[in-house]
Every structure is written in C-alpha cells, then in structure tokens.
Length: 251
Image (cartoon, rainbow, N blue to C red; front, side, top):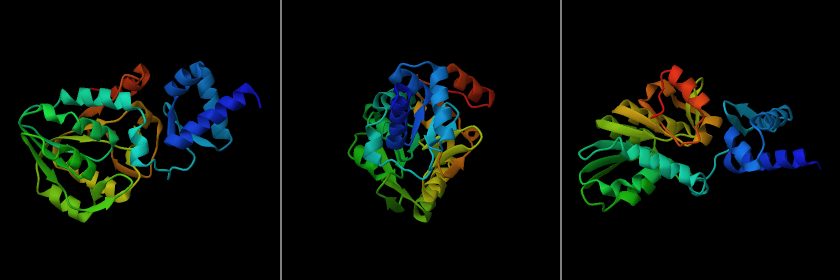
C-alpha cells in the first residue's frame, strides 16, 4: 500500500470516528497542501466512501451519530474558545437559552461568573452542571430524554418553551450549510430547537469548524434565521466571506 493510500485510509478513519472532517484538519494533521487534501476527498468520494461538503467531507451515511461523551473529547480547545466568545454576549440580568450539545455544555461550565442570570435548557446534563450556582435561576423543560444527547424534546418540552420569553439562545447543531441550513440527527430535537429559537429575541449558533463540513438528517432552520455564528479561529477567511455575503456574520 502506497503512502497516499495510507493517508486516505487514515482520513477515512477520522471521518468514521467523528462523522466528518474539515479540509483544514487534513492539511494540518497530514502536513499536505490544500490541493492535495481536496484531491484526497475527491478520490474518496468517487470511491463512495464519503460525501464532500463545503470545506470538508462527511461519512457516506448521514445517519451516523457520535455519542455525547465521545463528542466531549473532540475539539475541546475549540469549544473552550467558543465558550469564551459566547460570554461576551451575556450580561447580568439576562434570560438565556441553552440547547443540548457539547459546545453549549462548555458555555454552561463558565456561567458561574455571573451574579444574576436565568437559564432555560432542555438538556439534563447542562441542568446538572448548573444546579446550585449562586444567583442563577434554572428552568428545565419537560420532555422525553435521549441518552445519546441528554436532551429533553417533544411536545412536553415544546409546551414549556411556548410559555417562556428568552432574551438570547445559544444553539448547537450537528451540521451547518448555507443551502441546507442547521441540521441535527433527531427529528424531535430539531423541533424543540426550532421552538426555543422562535421564543428567543436573539439566537447565536455556536459550532466548531468541523460542523461546517458535516451534514445531518433533520433541519432546524436556515442559518439566516440566527443573529450570527460563534465559532473558533480555524474558520477560513473564504468561509467567513461566504457566510457574510449570505447575511450571516461570524461574531
């Protein structure tokens, strides 16, 4: 097996483990040019092993869902960076919403620095993280829990949200595309996330760079419905420009 084949097999293993890979990750991890990385993905797509997306590739099967605790170990530094950026948009007295997800979990871990905050969430792991935080009022939706994500969703969760007014929601997702929108693996979770977004004055999409090379099954909504995107520093200038021209700024 040649060096190129070994590299492509290694790229495929990452895609299988994570569900996706970003072009920038291939360049950095395998010390190759962007042209070589693109060629690798072209060949892998021709072999029907993956599907190329804007800025990377996803697994050929879009039904693959990475378990929550596995995702917590992926892109941890990027998620910490996103959480730090998100804090700039939160102030004492705010009423904020946190959907489920690993990136929003990193945000939750930093909320103890505020003295007066109301947090609404449909994620039991985030609720557990915030219980007992001084000065924080915690509201948890009802609903059916999924052990893959620890999110409560469905009619009970939606009914709770319909009776609330949220100032700012920080929403995670599994995949992002200007043409397909913000995507997630579960239909009920997508519906509950839409409901939280609808009840919010501002919605910030929080996602690391790998999400921009990933697709999923169910659409939450169009990216243009958000106030903007909070991501990490691995986002390329070309991608930032493409989203800005579509009316979606990176914040």
